[in-house]
Amino acid sequence: MTTMRLNGLDALLSKGPKSPRMPALFLGHGSPMNAIEDNRITRAWHKIGQDLPLPSAIVSISAHWMTRGETLVTAMAMPQTIHDFGGFPKALFEVQYPAKGAPELAAELQHALEYTRLGHDHSWGLDHGTWSVLRHVYPEANIPVIQLSLDMSQKGDWHFAFGQALARWRDKGVLFVGSGNIVHNLSRLNWNQPDGGFDWAEEFDAFSAAKISSGDFLPLVNFEQLGTAAQLSIPTTDHYLPLLYILGMQQRSETASFPVSGLQMGGISMRSVWIG
Image (cartoon, rainbow, N blue to C red; front, side, top):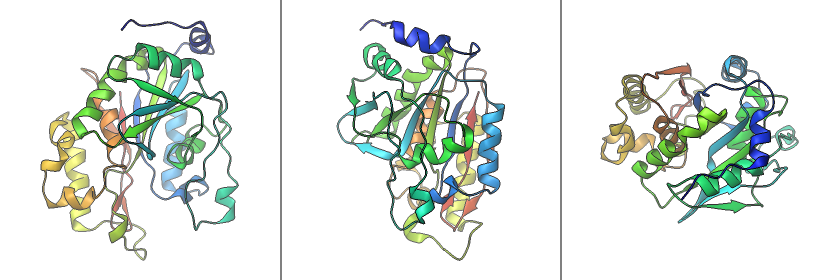
C-alpha cells in the first residue's frame, strides 16, 4: 500500500506556522462536568494548550467511541457535538464545540495507513471524551478535529502497535490526543471523597507512572497479566486503551511528563501524559 498525498491535506497542513513534531497527549478526562467547571484539572488543560506548538489538526482517540471488528474515522466537514451522557445539568447539554472536521486527513489515513484498514464514518462526531477536554485546551475550537474509534475486539498490544503506526503523522503537525482514565472503576466510587484514591487505585496509578517515566511500556501493554490492583483499576478497557496509542507514539530520545495527576472519588485517576 503506497502513501497518498492529497491536495486538500497539503492545504490543511500549510495553514498557519509550520508545526514541528507535535507532542502526543493522554488526558484523564474524568467527569463530563469538567467541561464546564473551572478547577485545577481544567486550568491545567488550558495551560497545555498554551504550551503546545500550533497543530495542523487533531486526531482524538476517545474512550466513548467503541466499535467491534473495525476501526472507523470521522470524515465529515463539520462534526456534531455529541452529548453522550445522562443525568447532568442542562448547561452541560447546551455546550457546543464547533470545530471543523478534517476529511482530507481522514482520507490520507485511510489510504496511507498500512497497519489496518479504516472505515469512514459520517454519523458520529465529537463525543464528550473529545470535546470536554478540547474546549479547555483549544477553547476557540479553531483546530480541525477527527476521531478514531476503539476496536474493542483487539487486545492491548494491537492498540499499542496502532499508535506506533500513527506516530509518523506527528511530523506533519498532527496532534494525537487519547482521552480516558488510567484508573476508571465507576462501580466502586466514593461520591463523598472528591479527592484521593483507594489503596489499589493509588498503587496502580503509581505503578503506571513509574513504567511510563522509565519507558518500560510492556507491562502496561500486557495489563491483563498484572495483579489485583490493575484488575480493579481496569474493570473494562474502554478508558484505558487510549493510553496505549499515546505510549506507542513515543520516539527514541523522547520522554514523558505528567501535567496533571491525582485521584478522585477513590477510583478515577486524572493523570495526564505528555509525550515529546
